Length: 295
Image (cartoon, rainbow, N blue to C red):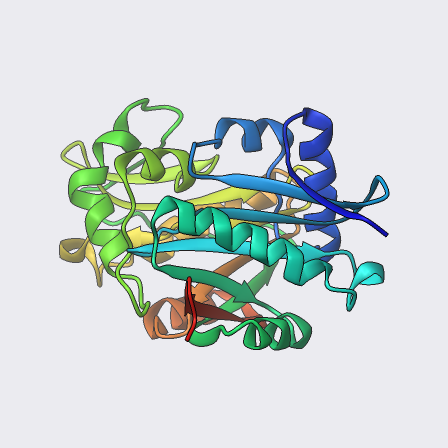
């Protein structure tokens, strides 16, 4: 069979791309077609792999939030694996990252099959992430808001999230327990790091903390925690707990029954906070890297 790998261009292509991702990673939120359109940049490439017109896989290559790297995500439907489709998709994605001028590739693996594929392709483990899940079975109690703090949503205060990038955002992103520092642009902060709803903790009008939920358009009873962070001078006062409980209470009030979050394995403080709130560890993800030209 002839394999064709071509960029997504129509909404039908994007919906087919979504369906592959949902089939391969059903436990993660997948962006809607509208969100995929809104997040488009010249650096991002979305492709579909077809055999005789039948979709068998997909892929994404993009600038990584990790400095000096491009990210790749080849995916093949289970019934079409072990025929070289994944390797062909990966080669197309690597060519794109090479064209962007990034020397390193980043990828992720959440299961043994994906991890084995990555290792065969020359990738090595560099970080780990832990998925923790909170199951909502009734109302969520929220701890008192710390003195001096006002909590609002980003939607209620347009421009606050954008304005928070320089002081709050940079500090929050610098705290990630990863092998290479994050390099998130102001545009990326606005486009990729804000979820809806996003709850902002304000002190004297400045953002000092945040938490939020990424709702799942395909599974309305599930949501993913957005960035949960507190500025250094406000830590140790219960603000992170309060914000996370605000988000969970909102979920409970809006028909969400399960909230999951991914945390770097090295971020022991956040993992401990999640455990204290009632999150259970449900999965471990391996972050992989290799040079564009291995060996």
